[in-house]
Length: 470
Ligand SMILES: [Zn+2]
Image 1 (cartoon, rainbow, N blue to C red):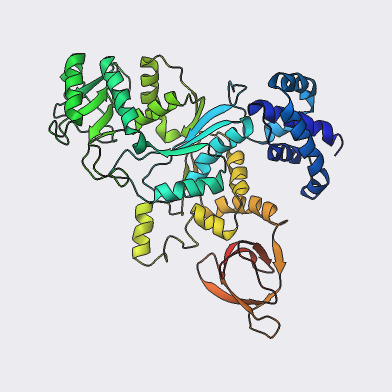
Image 2 (tube, protein in one colour):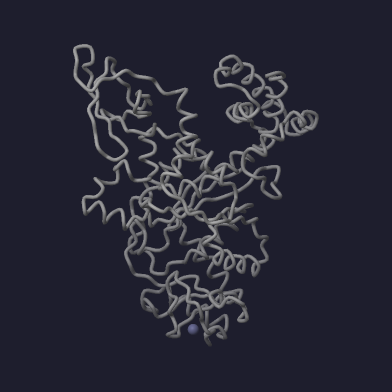
């Protein structure tokens, strides 16, 4: 590779400009890979790259920009096209994006990984902020384990979450926002009995009710009665957004924003009785955090319209929104309820069962986050739903993973029998959850990935080698 110094400098400047003047060496190396730099060449250039990064970081933003303008042509077009498509109107300071897993799952599964990945990758690409919000304002659906597992798993799989939080920790902010909406006449309290949609389910048809004609003063009083313990009871009142009544899609008319729910919340206990619904929290957070771009599942298209109406009513500029088609897994179990049932029946040994497509299991098997990143790049921002069988999905992911782990995997000789020279015993956990004993000459190291002839790659966790793929 020629001109490595010039190219390093160009990429260092580009990355610095996207990160408030501070370039990260990793980003430069990764860009150079796209240019053809071999992994084996890193040691040779690492020192030089690090010097360039330091020099660039000492420059003022203005000087960085000036220098970059001269070197911009060194930044290859190919690199941009190889990854995800460009987003629209990316600010020089980077993007502000978010990923919002629902608290109804106890761990990240393959669906979370593939939906969150493009957002993570864009923040890596452009710089900026990556928020992870745990959507936990439905006390009935919240699973306590998510607060511990999501941040840990996001750290492993994405590695660039700027900040994570549980929405239920921000209830006071949402209440204030509601008050603002009520006082601006944008929201009203509905107390009639037509509350088919009191939860997050929206009815196909809903006739606008008379409550929408109440005065701001009345609505404000009724809102106070919603949060008052001695006020409305569960199911007696719902806070709604006041939409226009001639919307083509009746499911959008006067959609609900908050409801009373006395179910004990796993994180907040009985501290709150009124719980804001997803559309309210999402909109508030997007506005507060000044989100610039949103990537979301296509199944949220109606909710996106609801949120858009709130943005418009408040005259706030809407972030650029991109919809991803859904993966429909033919034969992969990702539903928490169903997995729990099958564990109870003994079909899976537990949440650690190697067959479950969960982030924690991928990690233990030796999968690298980059393999999932490649998968997400391959899919791009397609809004077409894709039905896919487990084997087809993993044939692709395994292919990417193989490329990544091959150089780092340690090839070991082993035997099925305990011999004098092979006395270190390990249990190999196969992907169909059966096990076999293997014996090796050398002592294996925890967390390392090994390649076993005729079997494949596996990672050692304690005394168990978790099989990844061949
Ligand atoms: Zn009503």
